[in-house]
Each structure stands twice: as structure tokens, then as C-alpha cells.
Length: 324
Length: 267
Image (tube, rainbow over all chains, first blue to last red):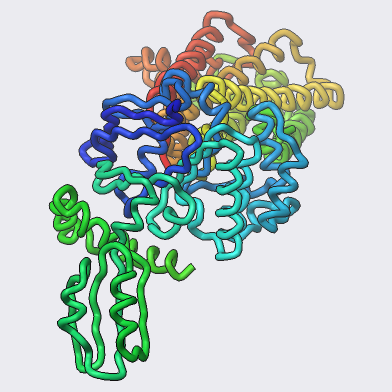
């Protein structure tokens, strides 16, 4: 199949500071590709190179078979884009803003814009200056989809969206996939990527460390499980189960991690009287530590030493994403 | 009005431009209206001015000796300082809002995700700048014409037109420098500073060059000198001088294009 996005040794430094290093990315046409990594990993840098907003230090990128640098205008005629951070013209209404953007691409099917606005429950008549953050994101989503582009590039599309709108957005992504569109979306929330994407690329410290089929990812997922038993905790029995690690036990309670499916754990638990069982969503950090430890381990330590402040910010946002 | 970046830019400055036009028209008409009473006291003025040191007189009033004429009066009241100040401030403000303003506001990333090349966007934004400055100069000209009709200024049509073309070119050259710095850096503050510095330095160099004989060469590097210094209305349009201002404008536009084409757009 043809490649919608193809980068080779793509590298970008901002002066001395690292943006991305040697990124070789292949996104096939028709894929919904998740670009997953913590903030500051280089997701936005990669996306901005694809749109020729910034220029790579070395390496090359093609989008829809066209050179990202030389043929940028032709590319932008066929691509919808939602930046991670952007501002709108405060004095224009939503309708005026979308008309303007539509005109820059030779006009827009207005009935489709209205359909999208209805769908996201967005009021086109209000001035952008008066919109809440969530509504600004909705306007951004509408403009990214309204011209029915072949490829949609979305930078953190669900940040700032409330859960209902998020669900509607997931539905829009599913429909776009069925319509044959290619989607490339960045995220720092693993469950979101698992929900909507067919493939996922893990980016860390500016490098693309792994690309996986989302279907295969489930098998690698790490769950945190806690079980409270009516009787004494059967520690030895669980410790012997495949995939179980980091086991801690108190009188009636076991806490451990499970790599892969939960089947064996659930069946073992069923032989006892269980008071409570909780399983947390697999966590991006865990996935990295367990499966890409050798690739990313060094960077992980480095990050922990240098980026404590930023990291706690990431975690907060991740938790917010999980809660949503 | 939202068909492209040029029309959008013109739409954006409707309000600001009308306020500037109203202000400059009011100021010009007021100065014209005061002329008859000033003329009546011209002999006193003449005595006073003749007592000024020659260098100072040349610096601020040029070489005019005909103090009772409208040409000298309007040069002093409008063209030597206030009118270029109006036009330059307006031009700089408009210029830095184009690329640097959109970039700092955060609207440029999304705009450039649409199929508009950077060169074309730059051209449309320059078009907005040129149209705005031209509109303000045209309003100035219209106000002078109305003033002439009301109080009889007895101006030469050719020189009046010439002085306004000079005013337009001075405004454009200074504003385009600010535009270029904004396009190159993406920073509005830096662009404003550059434009203001160019304007102020041009004015001061021209004054100093006329006051200090040994520094006379300084005026050759002052945009104000090419505009006509203190007396554009007496000098009219001098093609070679106008060409210098035009060349600075075109040069600044090329710098804007060259640097904006090559650089990263800030988030």
C-alpha cells in the first residue's frame, strides 16, 4: 500500500536543543496511526516538519508522495491539520473563521460544516474571543475535517475536550477510517490510542523507539491488579502464575502487575472468596519500562533526573486523560 | 471580505484605519483653518524667526524665507514633523500586526497549514500595509485640498501631490523595515523598536546634519532627507530621492521574503 507519510532519518535540532533524532516513520494510506509519547518527546516537532512550518536539520519527509519541503502547498491542499496549540481570530465568529479557512482552499461545502458543528454541539454564531477552551478545540476539529482531506494530522486532538465530545470525536475518527481517510494523531494517553488507532508509534526523547499493531499491544499491556480476599491471601499461588510480577502481600490483600492477558489471574482468583478486585488501565510508563527498557531505559533515568517538574505535569495530564 | 489574507487584513483594519483617517483629517483641517490668522501676524513671525541662529532655522524650517506663504506654514506645521509622525506610527503599527502579530497571537500556524505559500502570504500582507498607508496619505491630501478650498492656500498642485507621494514613500519605507524585522524574527516588540528607531534616527540625523556643518554627510543616510526634510511642500517630488525611498522599501520587502521563507514558524 502507498505511504501517506514517510520520513527518513528525520532530525531537527533547535540550536543545541534536541527536537527529534533520526525518525524513520512509515504511515500507510488508510491507517489510523497513533503517535504516542510524553510531552516534549518530539511529537509536535515531527508534525510541524510534515506541514513545513519548521525545517528539518537533516533527513527528509514525504507526505502523500510529495516532498514536505518543496511541494508543501500541494500537500496542504490535501491535508487537514489540528495544531496542539493555536489561537483563533477573536473578532471573527466560528462561521466567519471557517469560511475564511475554507476560502483559502477554494471554498467549503457549508452543509458539511453545519453537520460537523451540530455533531460536536458547536455554536457557529459566537465570536472566537468569547469561546471556552473546549469550544476552541471543537472549532479546530471542525476545520481539520471540514474539507474532507485525504490525510488528517491531529496534534493532541482530545486535550481540553469533555468526555462526551471526546466520544463523538472517536466516532468521527472511526467513520473517517471507514471512508478511507488516513489519520495521524499524537497523544500521550495510551488508552486513547488503543481505542482509535490501528497502529502506534512510540516516541521518546526525540526518537521513534517502536512501532506496533495496536492489536498486538494488548498482549503486552501491563495491568496493575489488587485483590482482597475473604481468607488469607494465597501469595504463593499467584506468584507462580505466568506474567505476574512485583507482587506484594498483606494478610488478605495481594497487589501485583500482570503482563499480557488477565485470564490466568481471574481464573486463579475464582477459586477463592474475593471481596474486591481492581485493575488499573495499563500505563504508558510501565509499557515502556517493561518492553522497551533496553531501548529507552537510559533515557528514562535521564528524564527522571533532569525533568522532574515537567514529568509531574505530564502525569497529571495523563491522569486527567485516564479519568476522562 | 474573507476571501484571502489580503481582504481579511483589510477587513481587520477597517476600524483602526477609519480612526486614523479621521484624526489626520481633523488635524490637517485645523492647521489649515489657523493659516489666515497666522498670515496676518507674519511680519512679527518673520522678525522672530530671523533672530534664530541660522543653523537652527535651516534644521527646522529648511531654506524657505517666505514666512507668510502657506507652503512654508504647512511645511512647518505638517510636513516637517507631525504628518510623517502620524504616517510612520500608523504604518509601523500596521506592519508589525501582519506577520509578527499573527505569529505572536498564535494564528499563523493554522493559517500556514492551508495551501498558501509563505511568499504569497507575505505579498498579501504587504498589500494590506501598502493599502493602509496609501489610504492615510490620500486622506491627508484630501484634507489639504479641502483646506485650500476653504481658506485659499494658493498651493502648487504639482508640489502638493509630490509632497504627498514623498510622505507615502517615507511611511512605506519605514513601515516595510518594521514589517521585515517582524517577518524575520516573528516578534512584534522587536519590529516596533526597529521601525521606531529607523524613523527617529532618520529625523534626528537630518536635523543634526543641518545644524552641524561638518556632519552634513549624515543626511545622506537619513530617510528623512530623501523625503524632503523640513520642506517637502516647497521641494515637491524629486525622482532620484523618491527612488531611494522606493529602493529601501523594495529592499526591506526582499529581506522579509528571504528570511521568512527560510525560517521556522514559532508555535
